[in-house]
Length: 324
Image (cartoon, rainbow, N blue to C red):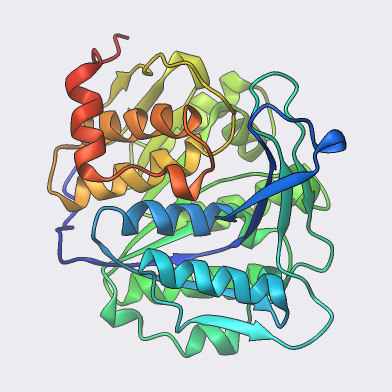
């Protein structure tokens, strides 16, 4: 599984960045909350923050609204050390994604405002401005494929990145509320998978791509892994399977006392890619991704909860590696 990344690699992350509002203090339900804490949010925003925590060079490609929420996102990106030169400010009636959520594990309420979402206005013209030959990897989150013009622009970005010799990675990140239908999602994801070197998704997401059951999705993942694409197939509490032409393996999850269900997938992606950039074997990189996922669900926030390499090393020292 030769990946070709290192600590000097430059990453471009494409997709949604937004604002998270957490009912405060932790455990409070939104409908009775009188205080909220804020954090950078959105799947791509979280992944970029997680990579930045590892000291890697990160740029974000997305659109935000010309308002206070859009400015909040740009300010947060700056705090994390994320390059925002490709974050386009849209001066119209579109809005940056806003999530109103809770820090509690049971019956968590997560209300996401995505009507006329700014990030889905990413255009071919904006993609054309990106010097893809300056990047070693492009990470795409599937929410960017949910509607045009972002869908076409994202597929074009994946094509341009690959032509420039960059590694292309997609997190399927299927959100049903963003798509007209699961069949349209499946067709679009198949096109994106063909343009990817690595695909990360859970059992529900691969089932959608396969237009079938979990068994159909797993079979699809295994088949894809027989070619030149590395597949990371996540199964929740059952761990994950890596399907690859030169060898497949399973890993479990770390058991922790979670305080919220959000952020695990973004943490997994960030620390997996950071592990590969540290030139660790795929099995060890996946293990570090699993550790980061466990850490984030047991901490407040998503982007603020992303671990540093030292955090991960300490966690792995103190916790037994999962068994499969």
